[in-house]
Length: 70
Image (tube, helix red, strand yellow):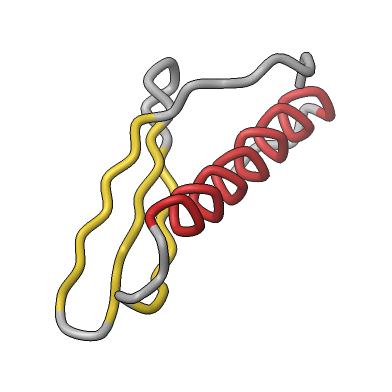
C-alpha cells in the first residue's frame, strides 16, 4: 500500500437483528463482506468491511509478488 487513502464503494443492508456491510474496490472489482449487529453504526460496519478488503488486496499483491497463485 502506498499510504494514501483508497476509495471503496460501501453497501450496508439491515435485515432483522443483523447488518451486512460490503466494500468493493472499483479498480479491481474485488469485494469483502462482514456481518454485524443491526444496531451498529454505519461507520463501524464500513470500517470493518474496508479493513477486510484492504487485507485481501494486500494478500493478493504479496501472492503475485511471490509467483504463487491459486
